[in-house]
Image (cartoon, rainbow, N blue to C red):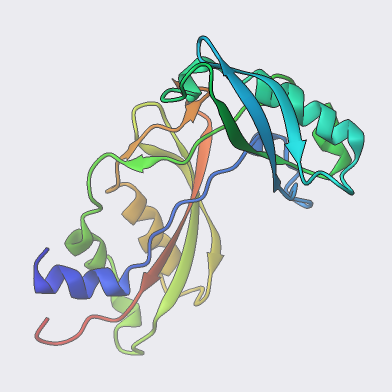
Length: 209
């Protein structure tokens, strides 16, 4: 990476977030997730069998039982690399929210996307709003998008903007059109409805950069 690109990278903060069954979370009350580890036997397939929870004291027994069934129902494609005949400790997300017990089964897991290609940092840095240059503003924008199976970010919207009215939200939306991802997967199959949240920090351009 060139020195110029490194400087731009320092000004552009990009991170990815994903979660389990996000489509079932009401926007006004997100479902909070924790991790429960199960000790399981690895069977042919591979598949997980005879799973027993570790450190489950204080967790609703119904949630533990539901989580155990979810773990033992994990498809083989998500367990590649496990050796039949061995025993493994397998962490699994659960929620103490009562809605957890009523989620459609099997519990759908959506994994975080990967970059299909590196973000074009130079091009994104040039999206800094011209109307904000004189004031020398630095702003943080968070963009939420759906990642299509093609890897394109679609249906993007601004969910946070620290300096509204200066064009940073629009710049963030334009930046998303320059990014390409590997599609998110639902139980090993590319899906059109996985979502990501991309925080972007726009800093004013420096003379002589």
